[in-house]
Image 1 (tube, one colour):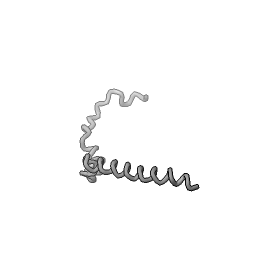
Image 2 (cartoon, rainbow, N blue to C red):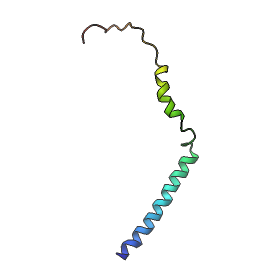
Image 3 (tube, one colour):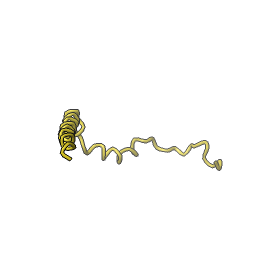
Image 4 (cartoon, one colour):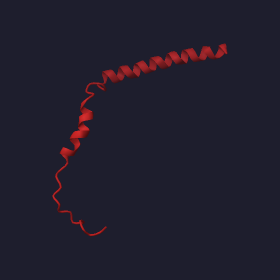
Length: 63
């Protein structure tokens, strides 16, 4: 039982440092700069599509 603690404690400390390093890289890489724009981009996506003209050559052929 005690032998497993000698392995698990350093592994858990290393994982904490690894997660801290990944968070630090994401923070300085701009991952959290703009949190609201991606949510609004879903709503604005329909406005960027060209309007349908109704001149579809396959319309009414019963495919």
